[in-house]
Every structure is written in C-alpha cells, then in structure tokens.
Image 1: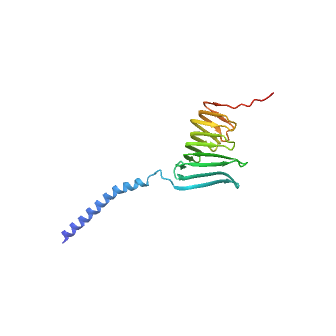
Image 2: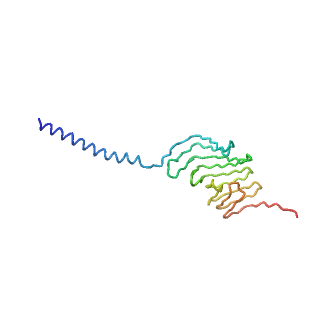
Image 3: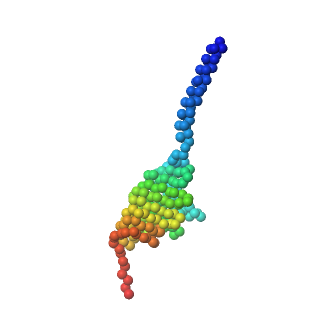
Length: 188
C-alpha cells in the first residue's frame, strides 16, 4: 500500500508541476494585457459641449465621437470622424472651424491638430480652407505648411503653401502665394 500511495503522490506532484509550467505561459500572456496600451480612457458619442468662462459662452464643440486619452503620459483627445467648433468673442461674433478629424494635445502643449477638409469661417466672412491646420491655443496662433486658399471679406483671394496667422486673421504671414488683391484707391 505505501508503494501505491507513493505512486499516487508522485502523479499528483507531476500534475501540479505541469499545471504551474502551463500557467507560466498564460501568465506571460496576461502580463502583456497589463502593459501600457493605447486605449482610450473614455469614449463619448454625439457630443455637444459648451465652454463657458464667467457665465459667457466662449466655445461650442460638436462631434459624432470623442476618444479621451487623458490616461496617457502625453494626454490628448481624438475626434476621429469630424469636429465642428464655434468660437464666440466678447462682442458675441462667431468664428467656426470644421475638420474631418482633430487631435487636441492638452497641457503642456495646448495644441490642436485639425486634418482633412479643414475650413475656417470668421465672423467677417473670411473663409480659409486647407488639408491640415495647427492651432496653438496658448499663443492664439494658427499655422500650416500645407497648401491653402483664403478669401477675405473684401474679395481678396489668395492661394499659397504655408502660412501663420493670429486666430483673428489680423496678422497673416504667407510663405508663398498668388491671388487677387483688392486695393481701395484713396483720393488725395
């Protein structure tokens, strides 16, 4: 009988060792899941967000989907299938930006990367179109190295490659452009 007991204990010991070795392989697979992955912390659908300051609406953001990656080292938000933002100034005038997709890089960058059919419409009817546009929200400055078209409210039209401007288009620096410039003649 002791021999049968020894064989039984040996079989049990071998099964336990085999299970431990098989678990080790599964443990490495489980550890892979625990590694950092680029998965959003949250997803919001059909958003319509208002940003207010001191009771005044400053911006209204609309998008079919927003993916929040604030759990990443460099936190950001992605609007993969489009976003439209209205910005309201102190005098309640509205500027609008539309893009096929956008990425908002939060602190410390405070930079927005808009891509695909980007269109900016200002309150004075200036219309700018490009394939990609960056907006530095801290410096209130927009820029691109891509081709662009702009039509100002006075009828001036320009096409060029690359520009930077303040967000109100009062300062507009084009790297190269061609177009029609409307110049009013002053009588002296």
